[in-house]
Image (cartoon, rainbow, N blue to C red; front, side, top):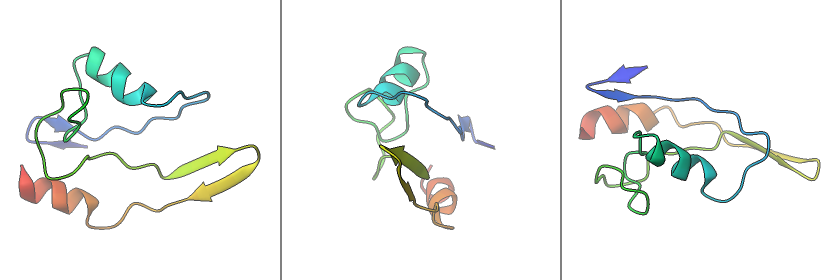
Length: 76
C-alpha cells in the first residue's frame, strides 16, 4: 500500500534482535514514521505493529486495529 509518498510494509523476521527492523529500515533510507530513535518523521505515535510473534513455542497474535491505517492517513 502507498499513502502520499509513504509505503506500508509487511516483514517476516526469522531471528530478530531488539530494534533490528527499525535500524535496518532507517539505515536503508526508509525510517518508520514516528521513530524518534532512528530518525523517522515526527508523528504522534510510532507506526509499527507486530501482528504475530513466537518465542520458545509460545505464540501471540495481535490483530492490527481497523483504524491503524485510517489514523495514519488522517495525520499525514
